Length: 250
Ligand SMILES: [Zn+2]
Image 1: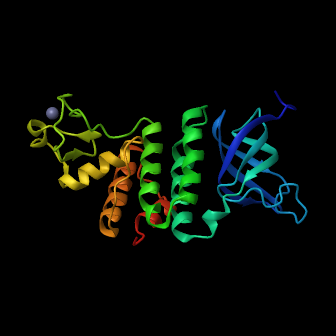
Image 2 (image 1 turned 120 degrees about the horizontal axis):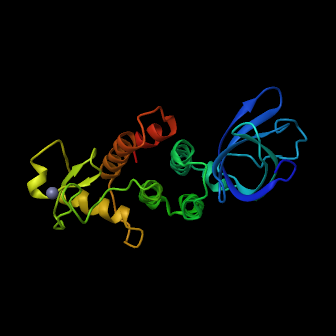
Image 3 (image 1 turned 90 degrees about the horizontal axis):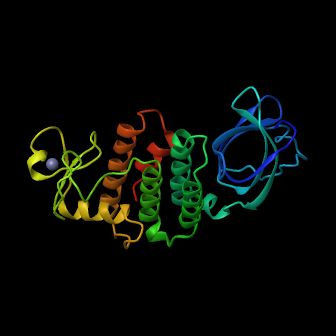
């Protein structure tokens, strides 16, 4: 395998400086999941990478696989889109950074074409959404990523005994991963959502459903719920971009 770079569509999820002039990048790749790679010389003024390795840049990565470690070598990155609309707007950038952070931490290094295509599409949606829709587009993008990771909440059946749920069931068990029927809701800790909040959550989770309209306060509550969900199901680690997005006022 060594000596033959693999070519795959990829999105830059993050990067950090390495030694004098290099960068280590985290890439969401279409064929190999999330991978780390060193871009040697990327910080030199006339680097062949130019400005291609900015956060959320999209392109084709030429990856030389390492035989001895998880750190591969990024030989080249053919830029397709920089998504510069994200960098020009704080709300878009904050949401996309949070999405990138969650993907970096939790997407495994294995192929998941649907997840990659969804992520790519969602970055674009966050970049292009009308200003008053950024918040709901971002919430849906986050939930879609969680669903693609197999950790979305159950909404149509009780998560404990699989009883079919009425539309008004409002008791959510974070730990168990979904809504509970009335009989189960009395046993164990639940988070109670108002009927409107539940309907809005269901709309955010269903890609085919119309996006809900959320006030600042409702959107903030949905972001907090989502962060608690991530902590519960993915791990309570430090996620500065996620926390900063969650704490935003609008
Ligand atoms: Zn039940």
